[in-house]
Image 1 (cartoon, rainbow, N blue to C red):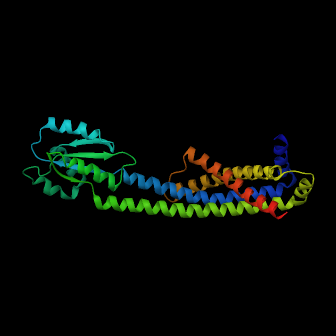
Image 2 (image 1 turned 30 degrees about the horizontal axis):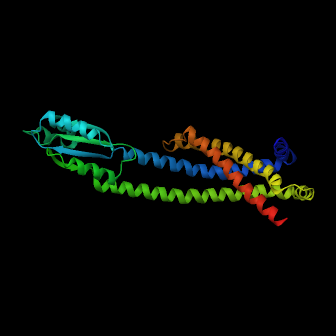
Image 3 (image 1 turned 180 degrees about the vertical axis):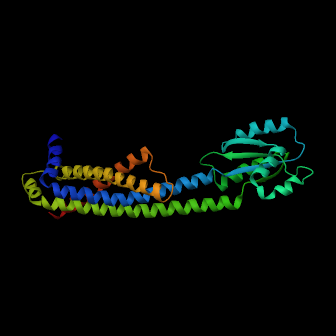
Length: 285
């Protein structure tokens, strides 16, 4: 194993310019992939923030005793889809309407009686903020005798679900395409290193070296170059994010786990590129 590691490091010393070119090429190919990742992360977080507004509202019949409502709140909070339940009284509903609908202040001031009913605002847990789970919760709420009407904005929740599905599918296709391009580019750079050492590989075969022994230094080289390229690409992505966040629009950067995952992905892509290139060369020798 020590010999293989030494051979891997020697490859960088023998051709420093080619190694630097390989790392740079890998870095820029992963940088493009990283920019797409930034877009995907921000779209996902934006849609997640919109999904937080998904809630089911149960309007209560007038005169419902507070004891009945308190008991119902505890029952609803036990639903597996429910995150929290807020009891909004008639007075609180009117105060909220006056605060949020300022254009109707004249109408609110002329009211002789409060026309707004009390309600239970049911917020859903993460992973349940979609039309299907909202409808399940709504159906359960309709079984309470003191509930007059249940709403959850079915049309816009269904549109949100469709947008998430489309965004996920597009992200998968485009992300896969970028990853494939990165593998091809990395494989090409490793192929150059393999061709440069083709005579050495032929001699190793003549003295009885197995394909596995020949292949392993190149695989480690590809892994190392992929990791280095991933680190450089992460730095370039951070610089691009800083410029976008400061001069264009507010944006989020990768979390620590996502950044480490990106570097690991660079290593795996480098490993895959090396595996393809070396395997092809050994089959043709």
